[in-house]
Length: 274
Ligand SMILES: NC(=O)C1=CN([C@@H]2O[C@H](COP(=O)(O)OP(=O)(O)OC[C@H]3O[C@@H](n4cnc5c(N)ncnc54)[C@H](O)[C@@H]3O)[C@@H](O)[C@H]2O)C=CC1
Ligand SMILES: O=C(O)[C@H]1OC(=O)[C@H](O)[C@@H](O)[C@@H]1O
Image (cartoon, rainbow, N blue to C red; front, side):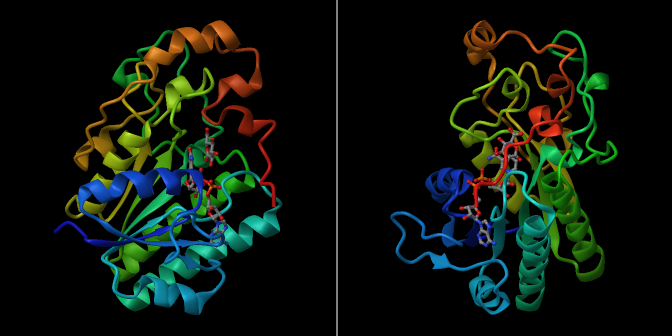
């Protein structure tokens, strides 16, 4: 598909939104920013809640594509998740459908499959041991459940309305990995920008689900659906391994928080602060 020029970036004030705001313009995008909170250094950003259908309709009008990052990014009571992530994502898809937007990149999460046991043994794992993209969904939290919903919503809007989505099950996208688990699931910000660019420009994606991580030596999951979009990850967490393992020790198979893709989200999830 011709490279989209104008892209609505929801969740622009957040951690990932801030990284993508810095990196994506180099790919030629003109970003329109939206968040519940003001976006630092961007006086023209739209301040709006995903609950505000009229504001969303106006925000998506005229854009070529959307990168949807806004929402609660940790665990929270079901009612809050329902409002922000489930109804909010529905509101955005409806606005996109009504305004004829063709393509959305949806920030799904590894926590949609967080209760999947990760491969055991020594990395690098052979391809047959990697978690496939069509592994049954096993959310580890209400948060993960909302990402599972978002993937199904995206499938429905493709099947029924022809609105294309790439759902990116992001691992951990931060400047550096900060835990031994992240050695397996880390996505460098530069690879994150590469993946979102691939998600917006690949032809005929329908609804495609991909894992979002760098080409980590200790990778747990299969990146082939992401690579099929043209994603060519350039980074690997391995240079951080020695220091993190010296500080934190190897993953302990007896510890439940070490046994699943979702890590500590399975038994002690971080809670959304507001
Ligand atoms: N950073 C990561 O490693 C991962 C991120 N993700 C997903 O990527 C997205 C971005 O993640 P982060 O930047 O880390 O999260 P974040 O919490 O830093 O940013 C989320 C942003 O969404 C905004 N927001 C929340 N509710 C909203 C609403 N009702 N209306 C409008 N804006 C609202 C917040 O104000 C915040 O700026 C989230 O959807 C998250 O679930 C998924 C997996 C891993
Ligand atoms: O699994 C992880 O590390 C990440 O997963 C997510 O979905 C969260 O939004 C992010 O804050 C976590 O750090």
